[in-house]
Length: 195
Image (cartoon, rainbow, N blue to C red):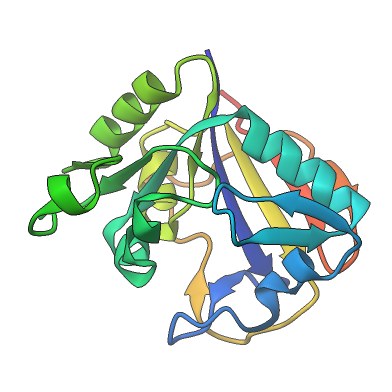
């Protein structure tokens, strides 16, 4: 069975977007290298350095489902029902969009984080589940549903914005020592959650 992990690109001071949901320089590492990593959408590939390619292949090749929140889903228009990773998406929302089954037949809408993770694990089978929305990550951490926390840390300070992490409902959470993959414009960090 696969693991449940989080992944976000984050500024050095802990933000994944500015106050208006803009990503600014955060995603420069996706276009700053010589190695092409294709996405599931035929018109888009990423140009990253060797380290970024290693991290992306590990992530993409081993992920079977993605969990997102409704805010991210709406911002991307549901990725046109085809996420760039090429995996099914499970969206946590209290209200599914109108005509969801017709417009996004490859997307599953559920009402809470626990159900989302359960459904994503079912869809992913032996592969991993990735959580890619800050509020969903926070809730999953509080519920003890995350196996590994991953960060692509970029050298920029936002000063304010949308935080990757928030207040933990059960106090602090202990993580193992990081696996560090240094790269150009991003340092990739992975931390297993201690049980």
